[in-house]
Length: 319
Image (tube, rainbow, N blue to C red; front, side, top):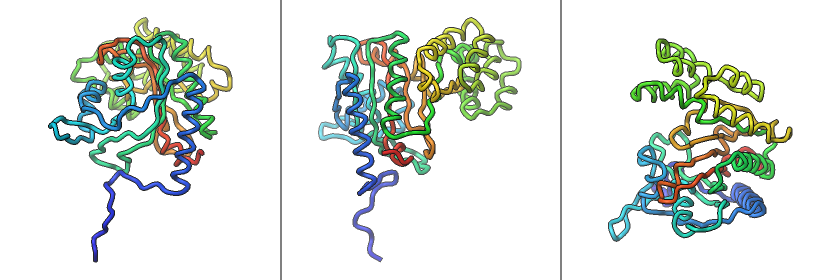
């Protein structure tokens, strides 16, 4: 039996015909809307020195970079995400540009998946960043933009799960550092039994995680959580309430508040969210506020953004 002359690595895909056309249409629609909203498109390189992605994402990113070495012996990495590259460009080429700065992008990102698990190793994304604006208005603008992108990309049955890292942060900080990772795993898995047992006898602020982590719902759930919140957890909840006040009913209908979202705690500094749509087995997008990132590139400034997974949206049937 002759060996195939054209194998492709696991996690890579050949996209032809309707599959390719659907992605190109989604890409055009997203970029057109972002241009209309004043976002300047950037085309960063497909590969960078690995330091760019490590500086942005920290050690947790190291095992997921696809690396190679150039003739000078420098270690390069395929684009892990766009935000790191945009932060580098904003801190160098665009340093001194009038603020706020609105940027957009679209293209492939590449990630090593150690267990593969059926997940792709290259993904087509489109997204937007708003740099230099720290107020509630910037958060509202990005949430509103995400909802409008979802609608214009053809999604009809979609939901934005929105949380704030400030709600769980006081409880996690009350734990010993060695215990935080395990507690976060229980929260991420919605394992109420292990969480309740594991937090028994812990400081009061930590013990409250067993309740806060399971608050999922619309405005009434948020109001109930705020009424029972400790002073340390109140600012994050109050921010979510003000954001909810700013949305119109048609936008609010797609927003669910999920206070147990912990996957972005090391990266995000304020709101964080994931976009879900019917027919997709994973999130179709994610975003939030990451005010600490730009400082890692020498230009501290507030930032908030969103990234959409166009492959997932295409597979869900949108076009």
